[in-house]
Image 1 (cartoon, rainbow over the protein chains, first blue to last red):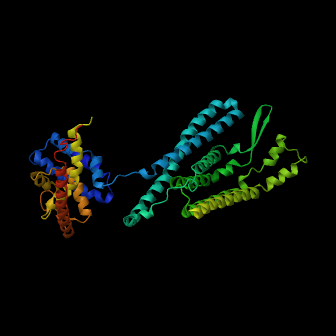
Image 2 (cartoon, rainbow over the protein chains, first blue to last red):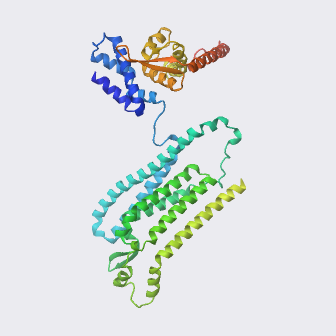
Image 3 (cartoon, rainbow over the protein chains, first blue to last red):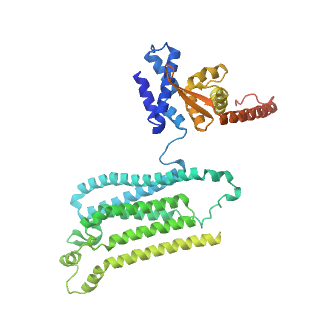
Length: 338
Length: 121
């Protein structure tokens, strides 16, 4: 009898909570009915139970018949772009980490073994995080699409052949290289921020002894890592949607602009915090002999360094403007030629 | 080469799937519980396994073709299903369509008579 309970449990476990009790009761009386047909009440042997349960079939199959639909995280509609994006992200992660490993090995050849272990561990852990981010993004896209499909179900009834979308013109399509490049750079940037922010700086080699004077204060910058993660997720979300739609539409353009504005603002917020910069940068430059106090160019370097936040914010803002303008222009051209 | 009987069985299962709905609806002018339907349908030459029937009954109830009620007076609680007024209307319509279908299929099959009698190649 215990086997019956295990069977019913296995079926109802895979069903929505609110239906479980009812289906459980129904299955229970069904199985008892079926047993009674094989043996007088209360005398069913375990062979009888087994034969009844095999007749009902695998709990998974029965549960899916009750549900009436298949469940999945990433549906067939978005599976292809999901795989594309996932490959790009994982390959970029591998490239980024390999770069870091190579650079670290050049700087400290003695620690090659330790670096190599770190490299392998990072490959696995960062790879898993990348996989997670891409999967979550696509699961959300898939979920919202399925929800829309239910809402728009009525629309498909009044469908007319004239509603068919135009066969995409090569010029109107978003070139796959655009989102791919963007994802690769985003991932590389994120990997560097997360794991080797120290490598961003002035590199010097002195008597075969290589070292870096970092631009950023790694301890403070660490507090901003959640924002870096958020930025990466936003950009990957944006590019994933571009890979899925691949068509320049007004809606996609507004979405693109919105994400660009949000990411730019976030980057500027980080850059504007004076604490993230390496305060001893000038002293370290002087100590290393690259910069001599009072020497040629000293003034220039100091004044650039003092204004670095403003400069970078301006550059980032400019990039965002150029990006928005160029996207808008491309969309406008497509729209007017249509 | 695929097996003839196996292929026929596979296609036949697809054909049967829709007919089971009519079979089930036809028997629910008076309340029945799931397992009591199995022998009734069996007797009329429609075999359906409970693993298909029970989920189907729930689906038809969800589509409001059937109404259900738990009967807890007997030794074993059972869920009885009965055609709803809407279900009766749908069933009548289905029967009408089914008869048309039979006529069309007969005509189609008559045309092909004398041709290949089996699809084996």
